[in-house]
Amino acid sequence: MKPQILVIGPYPEWDMVELEKSYDVKKLYEASDRDAFIANEASQVTAIATRGELGASAELIGRLPNLKIVSVYGVGYDAVNLDACRERGIRVTNTPDVLTNDVADLGVAMMLCQSRGMIGAEQWVRDGSWAAKGLYPLKRKVWGRKAGVLGLGRIGFEVAKRLRGFDMDIAYSDVSQKSYAEGMTFIADPVALAEHSDFLFVTLAASAATRHIVSKPVIEALGPEGMLINISRASNIDEAALLDALENGRLGSAALDVFDGEPNLDPRFLKLENVLLQPHHASGTIETRKAMGKLVRDNLAAHFAGQPLPTPVI
Ligand code: 8YV
Image 1 (cartoon, rainbow, N blue to C red):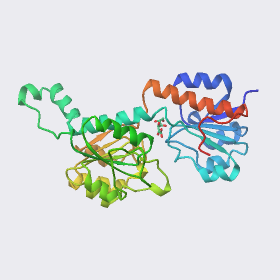
Image 2 (cartoon, helix red, strand yellow; image 1 turned 180 degrees about the horizontal axis):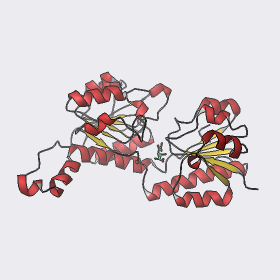
Image 3 (spheres, rainbow, N blue to C red; image 1 turned 30 degrees about the vertical axis):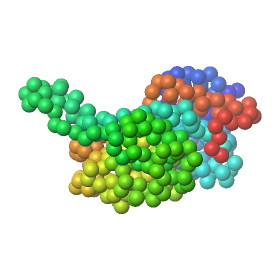
Image 4 (tube, rainbow, N blue to C red; image 1 turned 180 degrees about the vertical axis):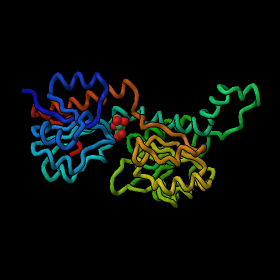
C-alpha cells in the first residue's frame, strides 16, 4: 500500500504525476466539503505536501493524528504552524537555494520595470499614443542610485549582486553585519536604511518577529521619491500604511509580488498607478518549479526511507 499524502493546493501536472507514482495522493483542493474530506479520506495521512503561501495550520495539523512530515514547495514556511509541528515531533522541510536566483531576478526586473515605466510604455505603443501624442513621459533612472536590502540572506545577497551591475550604492539591514557583504554599508535600523535608499528591497524570511517590520515610519522614510520592492511576504509590510502612503504620495511607488489575503488583494491597489502588481510568481519559471517539485519529493522519499532529510527546517 502506498503511503497517504495530503496535497493542500495543486502542483504542476509533472509533479502530480510523479507524486501519484509513489503515494496515495489526497487532494484537499478538490474537496467540496473540506471537513468531511479530512475526516473520511485523510485520516491515514502521514505527510503533507504544500505550497509556501498555503502552509498547514494548527487546526489542520491537529486533525491529522498520524502526520509525520510537512514538505513545503517554497523557501518560506511562515504559513506552517511550527509550534504545532514541534510539539508532535513533526518534521518540516522547504526548498531553499533552487529558487534564489529566480526570485532575485524578478525583484530586480520589477525595480527596472517600475522605475522606467515599462508597463505604461507598452500601453503607449499599443493604444496608438506614440503616434498620436509623441514621446512617452520621462521616468526615473536606476543605475548609480541608492539601494537598500532589508534582509541579506540568500535572496537578498543575490539581489545586491545584481544591483552592483547597475553601479548602485548598496546598503543592507539584518540582525547582524555579514562578512560576505563586501562593499555594502551595514545600516541596522530599517528606518535609517529606508532614509538612505531610493529603492528598498524586502527580502526577509517572514516570521512573527518580522511582522510589519516595514512600518509606517520605514515607508515614510523611503519617501515620495522612493520605491518599495517586496519579493518576500506581505506580512513583512504594514499594508494599510503602504496603501495610505501610495495614495497620498508620501511613498513614491511600489513593486509588489505578494499581498495580504492573496490572491484576493485589497482592491485599493488596483486603482493606483504608482504600483506594479505581480501574482506571487518570483520563483515561477519552469526550471525552478521543476527543481522545487523534485526537492519536495526528495524530502518525502528520504522521510519514508528513514534517511536524513535533504533540506529540513525542523
Ligand atoms: C511559492 C514561495 O511557494 O518560496 C516561497 O516561499 O512563496 C513560492 O515559491 C510558489 O509560488 C508556489 O506556490
